[in-house]
Image (cartoon, rainbow, N blue to C red; front, side):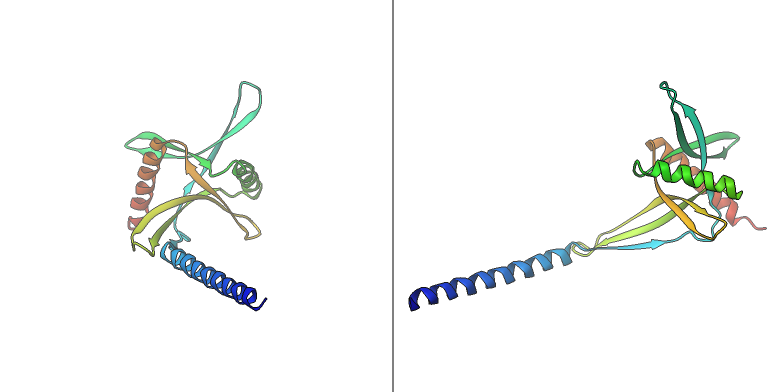
Length: 171
């Protein structure tokens, strides 16, 4: 019996040591693949106004389309935007209804970010887009947006450059 107990204790010790080694390996892997995200807010900056149109589908149902638009060289350009998930349509519709009731506008917020991969130290920079409404109670509501098509991203880039030029003009 003593021999079996020693074997059992030995097996338990080996298993515990293996588990500890696996936990340490997992922690090392997680630390190596950790991504650090740094965001910059555009708070206080002038923003593009997000607009909404309603259209009727063939089945008679109403659908909302969301976009920003502006003039570039006397031509109207437009960038269509979508909520990042299907629940966002309800959020955006609610935001537009509240904005209309409060006499406000829903604006497009551009948030710059950068991510650093701790393992490779590679930095990835980008921008994400949000609809933003600050209602009469001072509550800020946001909804993440994405481009509808690649051409929308190109037009959005032009509109944002025009906005930046306008902001940098002397008063």
